[in-house]
Length: 241
Image 1 (tube, rainbow, N blue to C red):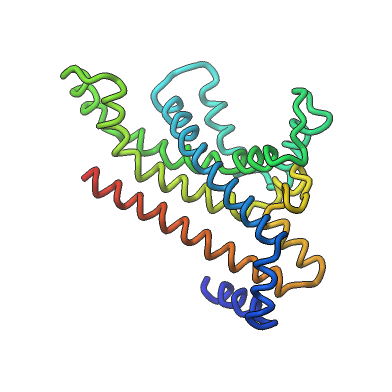
Image 2: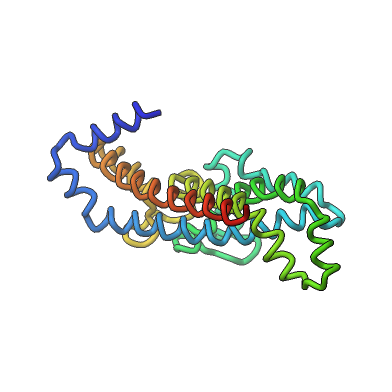
């Protein structure tokens, strides 16, 4: 794993430190990185809440069609990302049957990233909920605790590591996503062009060193965010203990 990363870092400095800085500090590169990290953080936060709620409903509630919905959660895992992009374009493009057209907007970027990353949180939280001891919740309720207090004091501390783990996975996937975004975003520089598409455009222009330079910056920023999320998870686990 370290060898390919080292190769990317080495390739990014082919033209020297000056060339590296020139690429990563250019306005298009900065705009693409800001959009990618901002959208990825937003999607990870939204999925942390939505994924936990969906996992809760799937584990704790009974309703018609539950098995079908549970199976659909894994659809983004099964679909090639470019197929996911075509699906989103058909649903939310100019010919949308829903009457919604978000093509070439930042909302399209967020929508695409949310679609492909939601399962990570759901599938991280679901097994923990299944194994959670319900007797502690029942005891808290019998002692007069409200449902919110029971969730906050009993359930959430046990779920926190799984939620943070799923959130970290969702963020990591969102940062590097390409296929689902490339069609629906419009790839407009300074507006809807994400880092992965920016990198691909440099490769198409035969500027491999420039593509590697932006890749290294994206890698470093992603690692910093992931380390922070993992640190919060360990802190939450110790606090729960």
